[in-house]
Length: 282
Image (cartoon, helix red, strand yellow):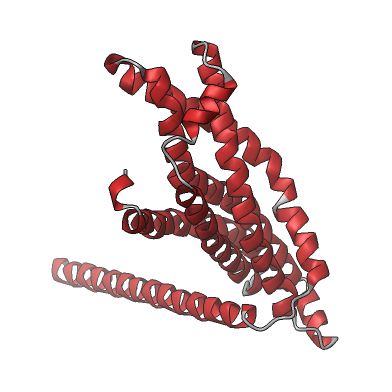
């Protein structure tokens, strides 16, 4: 009986190990398939973007949803971030003296080069990425995308390309608003702790930065817009499940978009700024 029991336990352990190995291999294969599908989806989106005309009416509607309706969030978040960064700069440099004159310059460099593009990308990923993923997933599972195809309407260009174009246009504009809102937040903090005038503050803000520090990072956020729009559209457009798929599409859109935004901000923006402005790199 003991021998039989030991053999039974070995058989059971072997079967569990085999099932775990199969589960791990299936998870890896699914992840690999999803990654390759996302890459193909991105290349298809890029190829379609290079072949206008686009649906201008739908793009304008998406610009309203993605850009205009995100403006209050961007402005409020920018002011709060500006106040927080000003407080951090003051806390770090207060022992060195003349910190009030340093805060505007440090704020402008930090906001225009890094915090503005990064915070805008993350906020848009959270708000717009979830909305696009859920909206397209609902259209897919309710059969409305198939209905568009039956009417000889290219659903990919009508639903995906318009949203990606809107994201590419909206991100630089929202980044500009975010950066200047952060500068305004810094001035609010400065006005509450010193007697610096607005004219002097603005002069010191732009004393240490040039047009390249502002224009280049802002234009590069168009790449972030392409990534956010493409990733969110992919999870929504290719969903194959029911109501659970809508939740998963929304969640995965936000998570993956945020990860890509952080990675691209570190890789693209920082490296380009270091390459073009080596003497002024942070």
